[in-house]
Image (cartoon, rainbow, N blue to C red; front, side, top):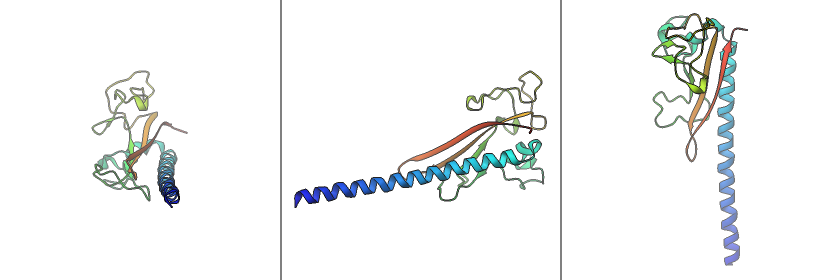
Length: 160
């Protein structure tokens, strides 16, 4: 009887662990898909307007303040971390200082600093309207079943 009880306990623990692993795998797949979709949206947008459409500053939205998608997005089935103020799991990060797109921003994950306007120099000016290259990081951070989780991908957009 004791042996059967121990075997049943072991089997139930294995099943619980398997269920948690399957849930974590599903969450990660949802996050990876959300990052992929957002990168496609960024690549499909008019290159000259990508920064204005997807930065965190609603004042520069091409259709008027508050009309652009902005720098955050949701992913169905994922819950934002407790410290996330807007409740959206997705975030788009550009090399900005305040609201300015800057070449001199120190962001190693984006390969920054970098010459964004193609003039051969890295400066401290705002390049929101004259960039030729646009480094971007897309991140999804969510509250996993056991711990906060995160998926991110960076790329450099250029005119096609």
